[in-house]
Image (tube, rainbow, N blue to C red; front, side, top):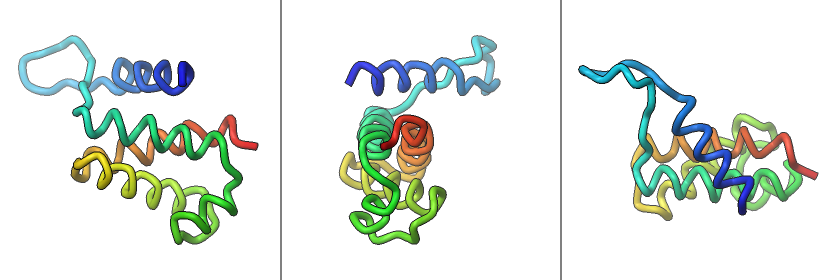
Length: 99
């Protein structure tokens, strides 16, 4: 759990971008986006790709699974497309630690 929280913090501080008048270079995630990121990260770092593909009814390739996992957790968290993208990013980040 600590790893997923740390990864979420890194995403929030590292995603940057200049919007409006702020030049701090940080982006904040909604609560749904944060939840989707953390749950997706946890799933994708702890399960084999083939098992994830079966569980989320996706084609067994990393991108298709990441999209499916992100959408699932965004929906569960009550988020929209931004939360789904955060979930997709969490899954992609989690692959590095997958069995």
